[in-house]
Image (cartoon, rainbow, N blue to C red; front, side):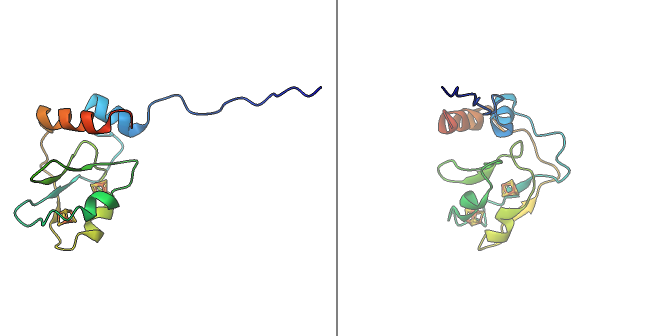
Length: 112
Ligand code: SF4
Ligand code: SF4
């Protein structure tokens, strides 16, 4: 008789992104500043949203505007290369994301 000795090796810890959302903080190891979308130039095409790597998932369409959440943005900068109107800029002076936006993020990423 053959015994099945396989064991699950699936990671149990929450993903980095889930942790960043829970703690609402940027990863300490990220050297590049986050990016920001200049809303007066943005045509809300959502192209950047699809180009942000899933491990970061930093771009959200929050209704009227498409925004980058600095706490989730590594500054990688895939979105910058895809934006058709070049309206994504380095944000050295980023400020913490508002509570209402975090609430939106938690609702839209629940179970993700
Ligand atoms: S710079 Fe990278 S991580 Fe930040 S929003 Fe753009 S694609 Fe996402
Ligand atoms: S790709 Fe550029 S224009 Fe399109 S939603 Fe993103 S920031 Fe706005």
